Length: 209
Image (cartoon, rainbow, N blue to C red; front, side, top):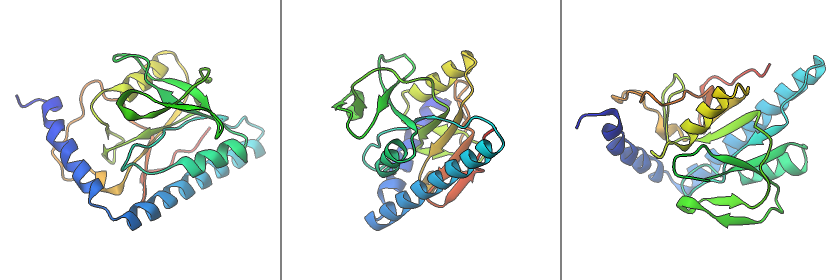
């Protein structure tokens, strides 16, 4: 059947092939650039907000990368140990449930959870101010292709339903750009506020208010 869901299956396969075709040098350099841009973006926004007498974001919901995804671990350690942010990581609690975010520090014990993803053991974290979302494919309008299980769409939709303000940033390789692809988002897909790649901001960096 020619449906959005079925068409996304071969598209995901092509996106993974593009991602996996990158050299190890390019992925290492690209991950470093992503970490640097994220750090600079958050630091400049925090400084601006504090100078204006406003509260700055405190809780960052990140992700532990799967093989092939940009590695963020060094930045997460820096945020948690040196910058005083609360960092959390997602935990799958059910096949049709939103993700639960749990506290993470470099000393937090981890366990291999659903789909082979490392998950922290511990208490649930506060609702996040910023969510970093692993992104396989993207459009310049903020549409995202993940891995097809819908966890982040359910999570973002749940936070919106609860009226919780947050900023969502997709973390992707530039190879995931869907420009020129015949791609139509599904009805349940939730747009991201911004998307950052190894080549820069594919969707402009958000200004935190």
